[in-house]
Amino acid sequence: MTATLRVQQPSTLSVTKAFYPTIVNPDGLSWLAITFSNTNTEVLTNVSLNDTLPDTVTNGVILASPLTWNASSDCGSPNLTNPSSQQITYTNGKIPADVGGVPGLCTVNILVQGKSTNGNNPATHTNNIPAANVTATIPSSGNTMNAMGPASAPLTVQNIKLEVVKGFDPQLVYGGALSQMSVKLRNPNTSADLIGINFTDNMPAGMILAPSPNFDISACMDPDQVDRPTTITAIGNTGFKFTGGYLAASTECTITMNVTMTVNGNLTNNIPIGAVTSSNGASNGTA
Image (tube, rainbow, N blue to C red; front, side, top):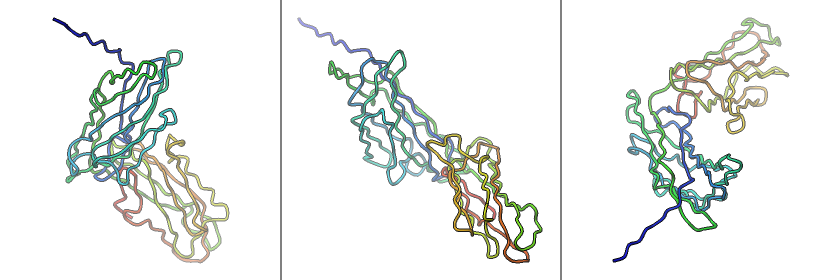
């Protein structure tokens, strides 16, 4: 009689995941961040992962089209493919070694889309990665390991809103005089942040940006200016484009600039319905 005892090396590989933002409008976008951690003093190679996004293609989470993703430089030269709109296959990754008790980290970001046939009924979809779906190799021994445990993260799909209000100070000026124009962005959602706020403002004939417009967007900037920069760009002297704005839940912010009138008379500057949008799917319902 014989028996075989298989000794498996204890795992030093862990995985966590999170959605940002955690709430999207139907068809809104969110970044799925998957972070690998290594407490081994040796680099882990051949890191692979298989992830199935939750629920259905009409009421669930799917990959954005086209496939959009990135990985931190510490991840090596990995590959990521999508066998279907709800499947993620990640291969050929690496995770740095633990140095002085500080685990090596690698983060992969994947753009996904929330789907719903009825945004009035909020639905939370939890994305789970079983530990067995994450593997890595220790180069010196050739031994493989799975993650120490599973990873999960929720994404909620529901109707979300965005509001915009414009104003001038002073409201009454003569042709050639300056007025400060303000664009106030409001987030009326009590639990949903708004990210990637974008809009273009084309001013009416007779209204132009001042020679020194003094754009101020500081109150509307995303906290992460490295990965999500906020910008405002003049379009000649007749308009401007704002991108990458941010509003936490139940907050508002104001963008200001100087404009001037080249004619006398009443001028109205409108931003059309639906022209102000966020990447997670909100838009303005009124002009």
